[in-house]
Image (cartoon, rainbow, N blue to C red):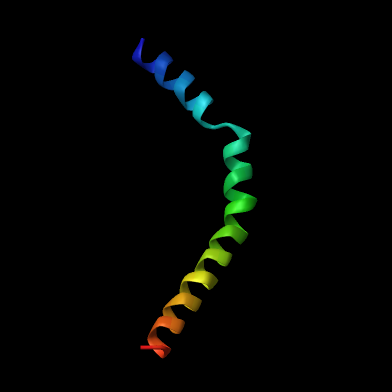
Length: 48
């Protein structure tokens, strides 16, 4: 029983929208977030 439940959960967990989320939006979202964070950090350091 446990093996069947595990397989069904794995199938439900491996959904194509997860792959789209990882390969699509979060890539540029993480880059933009990093640029914003570094900009705020440099601004705070320069304007002490």
